[in-house]
Amino acid sequence: MARTLIVGAGQAGRRCAEALRDLDPEAEILLLGEEAHPPYDRPPLSKAVLLGTDPGNGLFVRSPQFYAEKRITLRTGTCVEALDLAAKQVVTTVGERIGYDSLVLATGARARPLPVPGADDPRVHLLRTLEDAQALRAALVAKPRLAVIGGGLIGLEVAASARQLGCAVVVLEAADRLMARCVPPAISEMSAALHRGHGVELHLGCALRRITPRAEGLLLEAGDLEVEADLAVIGIGGIANIALAEAAGLAVQDGILTDGCGRTSQPDVYAAGEVARFPHPFFGRTVRLEAWQVAQNQPAAVARAICGEARPYDEIPWHWTDQFDWNLQVFGTPEPEMELVQRPAEGGRLTALSVDAAGRARGALVLNNGREATPLRRLIAAGKALDLALLRDPTVPLRQFL
Image (cartoon, rainbow, N blue to C red; front, top):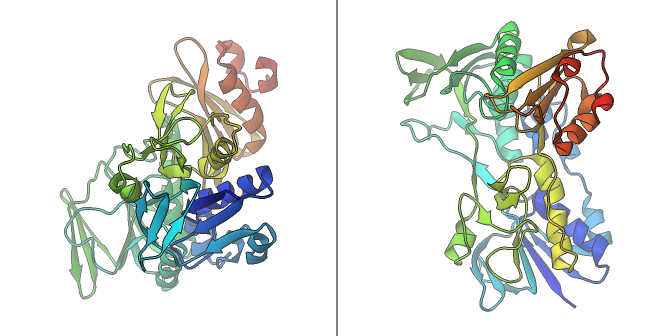
């Protein structure tokens, strides 16, 4: 009986195990996780967990009984320190050697640290794990002054949650606008207005250079600006966990390099989820995508490849963020240089499309308007030129353009 060994029991590891079991009822599946918890989804950490509306139980998409019923052997608290590709074994920190026929690396990413003096103070938090979220939640309930370093998705979600808990919040963002990597300038301006309207203090174009720990709190210095806070959260993105792969000689480049099906440079070794860098037809180049969608669906392509049913992963990129009363969904690549066609709707809802010089939709956003998601995906995938005059008219339904 062939054994598939999955290193990393996060969302991608779980999804790969599930997909494998669906494809092969007889396969032996072993899922190794470094954390003490069963696999859980991370998006609620910056929202429901911080707010206390979900203490963590809702994160666990599958119960422990699920893994037993599916005959997926789940081992938590197990850390792999090396790969022996020649012997087709992994080596744990306690010296155990575990063999495999197929190996899936679903090692994910870790929170990117900030390389400035004082960032190692215990009052400076990162947010990646359930323990991180629980520790930050415990600190926030005292309604401290919070400094958030980073005006991207995670930073703004933390800022919104902290304000809803009654904290005084200041956000320091090195770029000249919020969410600069994923939304056009017009949406950045709307986001800034949202946060300022809820009492968040924003400082843009403001790169932090020092944190000075003091008995009464933290002093953050960014250019000529000085901010006093009781605690800080760093939310400046993630770093792919490639150390195991790199040490074993696999091809890496800000991620583990794979083909569209997750196959690495070594036979019978695959990478799944946000650690994988793979060619994506929508972008026309290799990408590493840190998104729930990729961790949820790309591992199914890996499972198919292991079972001899290779079909590359090629979904139109999608991610979302919840901030205050906003649900913002982003599709494709809304590049800043593209024309942004806005289609406002009643109740403050909005649909916007980023259109290239040929009139094709390359990206789109919906604000509190999720019912438009399906036609937007189809419009982007179709890649055909659109009548922009009609597109600007919000009374013309999107399905008319399909």
